[in-house]
Amino acid sequence: MLSRVALRSVAARQSASTALVARGSASGARDEQNFPRPVRGEPGKVRLGFVPEEWFQFFHAKTGVTGPYTLGVGLATYLCSKEIFVMEHEYYSGLSLILMVYIAAKKLGPNIAAWLDKEVDNIETSWNEGRTNTIKGLEQAIKDEKTAQWRAEGQELLMEAKKENVLLQLEAAYRERLMQVYTEVKRRLDYQLEKTNVERRMAQKNMVDWIVLNVTKAITPDQEKQTLDRCIADLSALAAKH
Image (cartoon, rainbow, N blue to C red; front, top):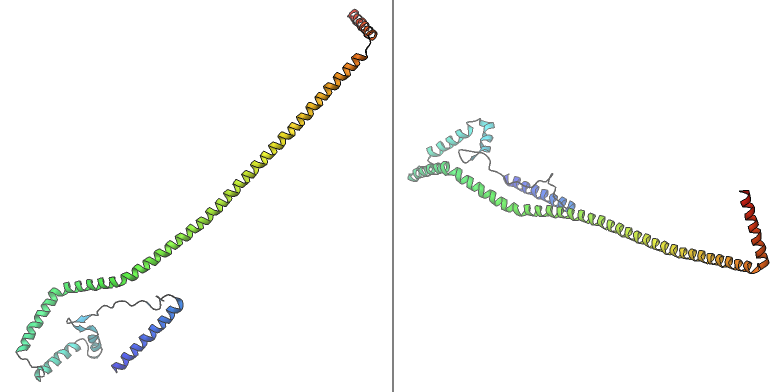
């Protein structure tokens, strides 16, 4: 009967582990919620130093609180009365040995138990240290990857700013060259205008000089004398009025 229960338990664990492996391989990660990681079991309660608490709970439903003790005392009395358990000289040596073990367990047991628990915790910590370091390394890698992505985004912004700066420099150079072209064209136009004005003034001066010269040449001495006499007469008439 016990072997059948053990086989069924082993089969159930194998099926559960198979399902866990299948689910983990499908999703790529362990389902910690439905399939938590096994935790190191702690020893259960005991009575009299070595009898499991489950035995007393089993007898409690049938015989009450004193059932297990009655069974133990009755069994020991039966074995001794029927001489199934012979109390020879080694029996008393066993009693003394049990007494010494009991005293040693009471005196040294807590310290030894604490030391063993500490050793077990150290071993468990050493086993989990690699997993913990791997998790920390992966978390740090994820953090570094996010930082690298953030820096890459910053590089994109920097490249955009550099492109904008280059465009502004090109625009400034374009406007500067436009101003140079405007200045050169204005200077040449001003030169042409000044040249035209100078030519016009020179032509007018030459025309006036030519006209004056020709008019002067056309005036005879008699006309000049008559004009002079008329001017003197006009001046005398103006002086007489004043």
